[in-house]
Amino acid sequence: MINSLTHSALDIRWMTEAMWFHSDDASVVRAGVLLLEAAFRSTQPATLPGDPLILSRLSGLSANVWAEKGRSVLQGFDEVEGGAWRHRAMAELFDAVNDRFGGQIQELVGSSVLASLAVEEFPLVGEIKPAGRSKGKRALAKDFQFNDALLKKAEAAGYITDEHKAWLLEKFKDFATSSTRLYSNWDATARNFFSSSITQRDFLTCFGYWPRDSRARLTPAQGAPAPVRSGPQSFESAALNGSKSSVDRVLAKRFGTQNEVQDAEAKPVTRAAPGGFPPRGFGFSRGAGAPGAAA
Image (cartoon, rainbow, N blue to C red; front, top):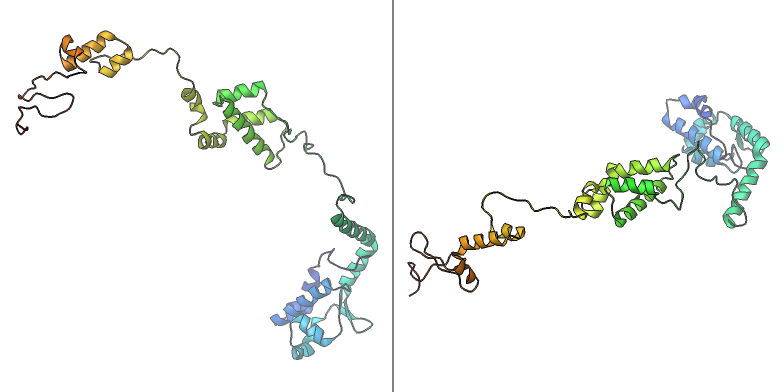
């Protein structure tokens, strides 16, 4: 047996079909709604006390106004033994629910209380169904790993190092378990995940470059010939090309004859520059004979 109406719903027709609901006085409409709610939540279902003072407080009306309009607000209630007021339609619903489902509801409420006190001894009603039984779809296996085919797809997408692949696997598992996603083909889902713009943007944030640039950044070119430039060579390009004759020519052009080149590091040769001011070394210092030089 149940002793509360909170297991059922308050029928809106109990308000709309009452005369007070169509009153021009808003306080009367409010009083009728409040009394229905009080009866619905009462420990004696569908019942209000008979004391006029308590009824006026429950309805939100003053004692004087209640004495004048209380009877009209109690439309739908019948006075029962002891002076209490019982809502007719609400009481019929309560009795019907109690007769048909009271025992089951009481048992469920009692088992829920016991379960909350001793979860291990009183399991909840029903069992949790294993994930992955929805029309052939299943959740990602806890021990999921990329197979060889997926690893090749990952490398083709730019995830080439072990660190890349470990990061990608962790991200994919987070994606799969964040909302308990169910798919019938997880390999196809993984391939789509590799090429996803969101995955690639996360990779850029983590590693500082796009997956498509991984191979160019991390795999140096093997045996690639140095580019040959036409025209005059600099000292640096000649040294990079490994050409001694080119280095000699550049040094000779920069410092003078071959004999002068041999002494270039020890003492750069002073050569007269156009205008009569010989430069000193590699800088732009003025020679001893330059105007303004110290005597």
